[in-house]
Image 1 (spheres, rainbow, N blue to C red):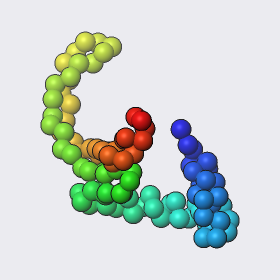
Image 2 (image 1 turned 90 degrees about the vertical axis):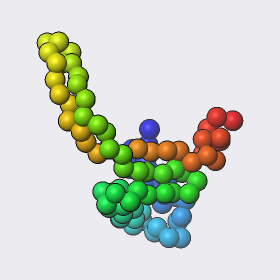
Image 3 (image 1 turned 30 degrees about the horizontal axis):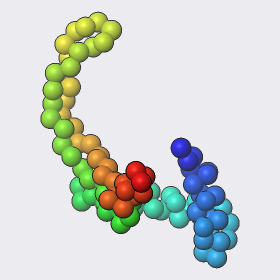
Length: 95
């Protein structure tokens, strides 16, 4: 799995005319992550063509079990992020 540092390095190497330094690429990465989070937090979701779609889903509350004690617990409802991979990327991974 790529770390942030590895991703930033690859970003800089992919676009050396745009990102003169790793710091420039890191600022772009941080801005991208902030925009992605803003789109998801707003409930709109984010579609990245060729990569996939981030959407917000509501998970219903449910009953669970504490594995240490075996006691029944109530797990509250919550919103969560779902990622669906783009068809082209999925096909290239499974070719």
